Length: 182
Image 1 (cartoon, rainbow, N blue to C red):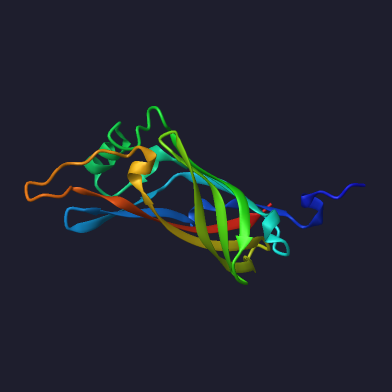
Image 2 (cartoon, rainbow, N blue to C red):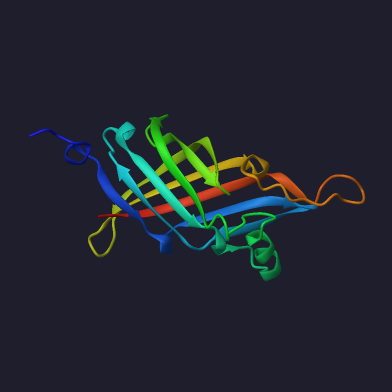
C-alpha cells in the first residue's frame, strides 16, 4: 500500500465560525474604522509533525461585511469597494507552509479579492490543540497582515479639502481561527 499524506499524518479540520473571527481596520479621515466578515468557511489539512505538508483554504462571503454602520456596509458592498454582485467571495488558498519556530509559521498562498489574485505570506501563530467538553479535538491559530487595498482593485477614495484622502490604503487584517477535527 502506498502511504498518502492523509495516512501519514495530515488530519482534516473544519473552521468553527462560532469561535473564529475575520476582522479588519483601515484609516478613515482621522481614526480607524473596524469591521468584520460574519460569514466564512474553510478547512485546514494539518500535519503537526511535518507542517510543510499542511494546507489551509478560506472562503469569505464578501456581502457579510459588517462595520456596525448600515450605510457604510452598503457602500462597501457596492462597485466602489467589494463589488459583491460580481465578486461574491474573498478567498485564500495556501500553496506552502514554512515553520519559523515551534509555534509560528509563514503560510504562503493566494489571496483573491474582487477577482484579483495576489500571493501573500501570512505570518501564523499556532495557539495549541485541545479536546472540547464533547471529546472533539480543536486547534487554534491567529494571523495578521497588512495589505494595500489598491493592489486588489479597491480604488475608491475622496480627496479632502485640506489635502490627503478620506480612506487609507493600508488595511490591517486579523484572523483568529478555531477548527474542529473531522
